[in-house]
Length: 404
Image 1 (cartoon, rainbow, N blue to C red):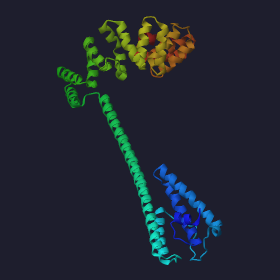
Image 2: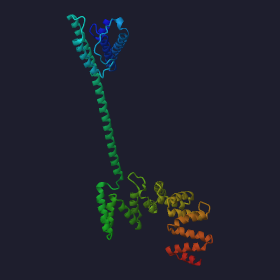
Image 3: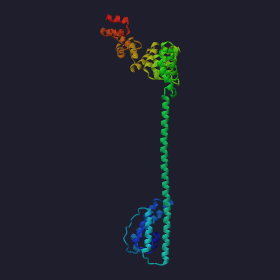
Image 4: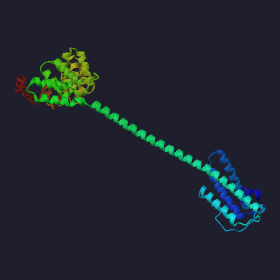
């Protein structure tokens, strides 16, 4: 490029000094680099790239070939060279200020009015071009700000939606829990308690006592149903008793519940007599045993034992005995002592009798006495027989103990 093309590209007056050209070139490079980074489109970025390469080429030529280009070295006030502008907008103001200074202070060899007007036209053209670049930059900045604001709003909406969903889920869980945990409906609970209290206040009047208990039971008050089941069993009215027993052990879905498994085990034989169907009774008992209730496991074992199914009976006795049921422990001892379904083993029988006797199970204590008697340990056998005789007032055991 010749000097005229360089000055035209840099928008400098004719016969500008080397220092001025170098300074202007460095400023031009800084501005073009910034415009290249924030260009709103690929086409504009390519234009800035071409101009940037041209400015770098000019900087190299001016530094190395100033003499051949005919650039004059006129000393001017030294200023900071190659100083990059802090921002595009500072460069714009600085550029305008410097241009005005050049127009006021620099001496041009050709001071004709025509040349001055030509330079002013070029300066105006440069300002228009700079304003256009500013327009693209402002649009890009506004667009980025708008996108960032949308992203923030989207995140806020997502967080609020997630928190709302958690609150709704929590409320649903609470409602379901309260619905399932209530034994008596809330609207009937106070009435049921009132009827139950009236029954307890009228225990001397059997008719009134039963009447209030039945009302409380009809309102699903379990304590009233338990008393009625026991009352009718003691009276031998197993049909009425079974009504309240089944109300306690069978839920709304018709399935056996383990909540009152002890009631089922206690009145199993009465239920069997009412239903007059051993298979149906065992089915009910099996459901309760499957829930792991030790009393139901024992009763199921007894049912199998009575039908001489010793193998399966022993299985349920063991399950119940592991849960510390002394009646099941006694039955295992009996089976090993009497060789029922297993080989006779007094040591194993003694082990289970001892566990049950620690809970004052007198059948187990009597069985333990028989094992001591077979082993010739009359002292321990006598202690066992006397303990059972004192509890049961059995004359046979008293006589047997005195003979030892």
